[in-house]
Image (cartoon, rainbow, N blue to C red):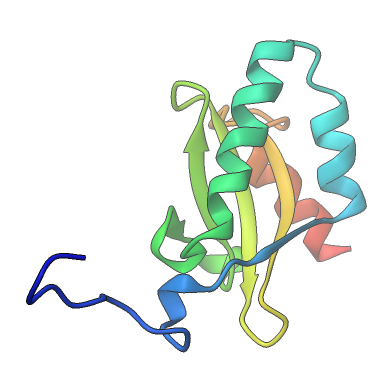
Length: 117
């Protein structure tokens, strides 16, 4: 560092935390159903980005999905639905799928059914 330069951030700075990534069994099944390797690779890379400041990514969901967040991937077609668990420093991925509004296979419709059970 040059003269007069200061280190930015500290070890206690929350932005330096790296979250662990966990998947529900449903999310793993959804990922396993994706056959296109390129799409799967893009999704995995996007999920890995959630390790850093996941609460600042995506958007907060409403209604039945309050407490969850959604981030877009693969050219806006897919959604990764997750919950940030601050106490355990974990991002819990609960679903991955295509956004097909009005379709019973829409990722949000699938998750609402799963979470209602």
